[in-house]
Structures are given as C-alpha cells and as structure tokens.
Image (cartoon, rainbow, N blue to C red; front, side, top):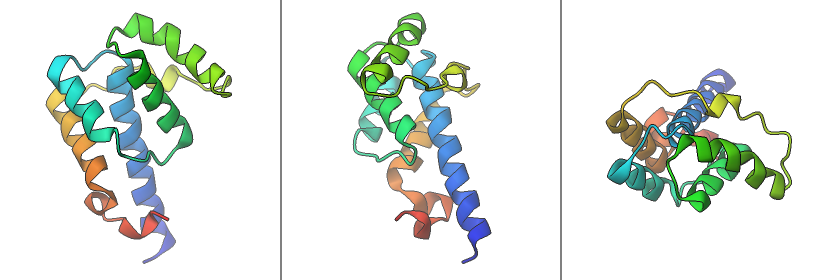
Length: 122
C-alpha cells in the first residue's frame, strides 16, 4: 500500500469526523438521532485530538442548542488547556440530514475498514 491511499483514507476519516462534529455543534441533530450518534461515538477514538476534545465537550454540555454550544465549547476547551482552537469550521451546518450523519457516525464506529484504510490506524 502506498502512502498516497493511506493519506487519502486518513483525510477522509478526518473530514467525516468534522462533518459529524459540525452536525453536533450546530444543533442539526435532535432527539433520538442525536442520542444515537453520541452513543455510537462514545467508544470511538477520534483521529484528531481537537475532534476528540470537542466531542467530549459536546457530550458534557448535553444540549443541542447551537447558541449555547457556541458559547460553551470555547470555554470548555480553554479549561482543558486548548484556548486557541478555531471553532468556525465546526459552527457551519453540515448540509446533511440526520440519517446521513447517523450513517457517517456508524462508519466511523465500524472502523477504518469502511474507508479502505485499515493499515493507517496505528
């Protein structure tokens, strides 16, 4: 396997993580769909440390209200020692419906095999 496909798989995973986090941070997911996504990813290890911190903070905050999340996320990450996080990329609506976000979360949970990049996880 060449470095090019590995990198492409890694980038696809990071983009998928960002898309799911955008849905969680913008309040695009509600009710049972939001709970399902959170449950699916509670045992998932995000590839990017910032992604993991944002996910953990979203779980701690326990609301889907976008305005409250916009206020609380920067404060939570600052408390965890990450004051310089650029949240703008997570505050744009993902443009996908809840069922598609749920599907993406399931793919992340299922592992990198879904992306054809199983060897990239080390």
